[in-house]
Image 1 (tube, helix red, strand yellow):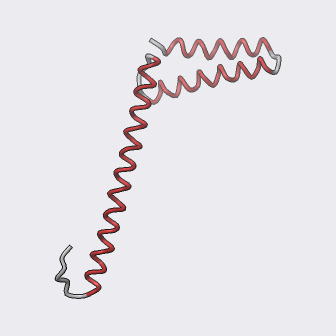
Image 2: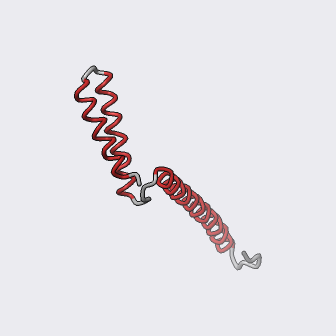
Image 3: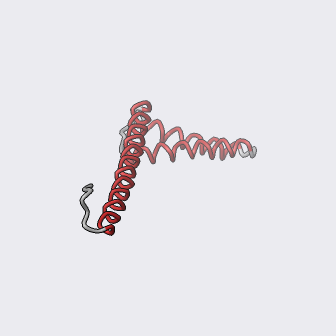
Length: 99
């Protein structure tokens, strides 16, 4: 920022531009950190389970866990046969994904 400005409006524009630049750089840094953190989480999660780290594999793992959750809820409601079916479907899906 130059101190030899020809008018106060030029100085004001320069000051506001500097503030906007700091805000934008801060947001870029924040979103980069969030992106790296989510990417590292997905990679760690996938490697711990032994599955690929692509979106379809992670969605299938979430679906398998949801099927097991649905089976447990069926057991709580005393629907034993339905609970067995849901849990077996969830375990089948997860066992097909895990290497």
